[in-house]
Amino acid sequence: MIDFHCHLDLYPSPQLVRDECVKRKLDVLSVTTTPSAWNGTYGLAADSPLIRTGLGLHPQLAHIRKGELGLFDRLLAQTAFVGEVGLDGSPEFHPHWNDQTLVFEHILAACAAAGGKTLSVHSKGASGEVLDRIERFRSAGIFILHWFSGSLRDLHRAISLGCWFSVGPAMLMGARGRRLVADMPHDRVLTESDGPFAQLNGEPIKPWQLERATHAVSEAWSLSDADVSLQIQRNLSMLIGDAAAK
Ligand code: MN
Image (cartoon, rainbow, N blue to C red; front, side, top):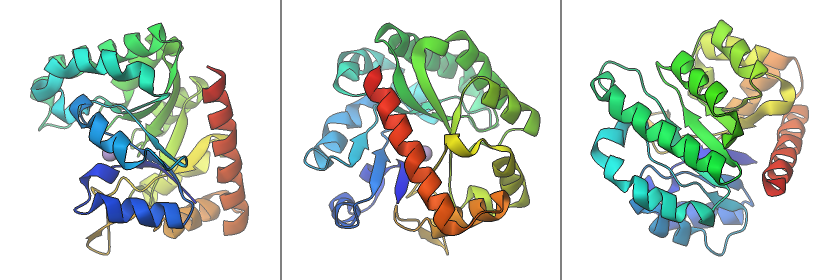
């Protein structure tokens, strides 16, 4: 099983969640929301090769943490994975739009200068604006749009730009999310929890509670759950291979 966007460091007991991921042999992308969280979060997974850590600066924190971009640049060589990064156009965060674009564009330029990374990207309420940057900074690497919630038109633009998608149970609860998944290329989809932010039955979702996502994808694609699991595992091997080649 694969959880390719999870905030391991933000669970009340990160070590327990990490231990369970290791026990279950889960492939995880453990994203961070600030560069200053890197050392601690990377340390959580230092002896767990299936848990990869992303260096991030979350768009909702851009205005508070933009001073950490220098630290971001110094840490970037330590990882092939970047996230969580992106833009957030929701009313609460739109007042900080200039800081958000400054941070995101800085990060994209840094990834391009480093030869390309694999990025887990937030695009809530800003899918068009995120895709504009992806188009401008194509050499920043491989883009995985996490919990994509834009229009079908933006989805098809993202597909033509070569984007990947990580989808989770919360996204697939609604008809809209399932409609989007139906159009996603089968060879560019991974599963994610976005725990502990995303919830399942009123509790923070855990990285191993993704059966519902796999099942929703299998319905959208008219495939069996087993075939979808196999496809997603194959997708990850392809992605890791591509990332390693960069
Ligand atoms: Mn997240």
